[in-house]
Image (tube, rainbow, N blue to C red; front, side, top):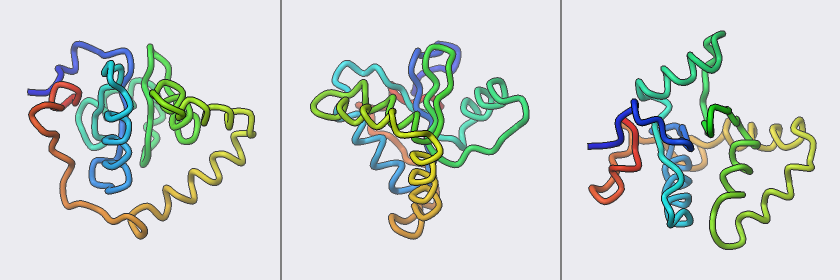
Length: 139
């Protein structure tokens, strides 16, 4: 069984569970996070809906990656860069793009997000983690 929502890991990546690009991104993060800092939950999960409703009372709909880290929320390109900063290998170097104004970073991010289903496809249901990875997913 996955991680209980009551444990509140310090770093949770919320992702579109039916998006092929998003699922591949989760696997990418897992492979470069040997100390298992990051946990994951689909945006479609009850946990994600509860967390996002709490953090954004206006009920904004989230459609792409969100990072919940130590009580702070990162969205869109800021989430991707913050995640990259904490991975192994050369990926922390990507954080240098944080100096690019968010309006530009998010425009590129939004363009990819808008086209992700067309370019990478979509699943009928959320990803089911392997037994070895199940502990890193919040149901």
